[in-house]
Amino acid sequence: MSIAKISISQFKTSFGELNSDSYEDKLCLCDSRFRKMRESVDNRFRKGLNSSFIQNKTKIIKEAEKQLSECFARKRQIFELQILLVGTDFQKQVGKNYSAFNSEKRILIQLYHKI
Image 1 (cartoon, rainbow, N blue to C red):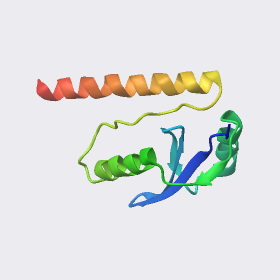
Image 2 (tube, rainbow, N blue to C red):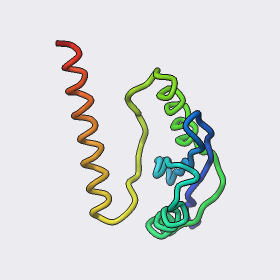
Image 3 (cartoon, helix red, strand yellow):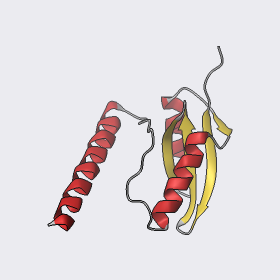
Image 4 (cartoon, helix red, strand yellow):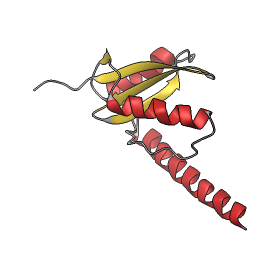
């Protein structure tokens, strides 16, 4: 049985270069390529997933790039991607709560604009 690899790809945007990582058909990172703590973040993912990186633009990474491009062109506000949260239990809980908060915030904004 082979060990799944973390696929990584770079993506140039008008806001700078991004790293997009996926693992088992889920997006697990989309972050600035030149982040100050890049090595620390990469090591946390490598350790958390007990895996290594491979340069590969997967289907989910291509879809993330497409949706980000649409967002930067102001044609998309909602992302529809399978996401894998990686980190400590606390970090995962914060990620879940952040996502839920943004969903609730988005609904409130949409309701407000309909009034």
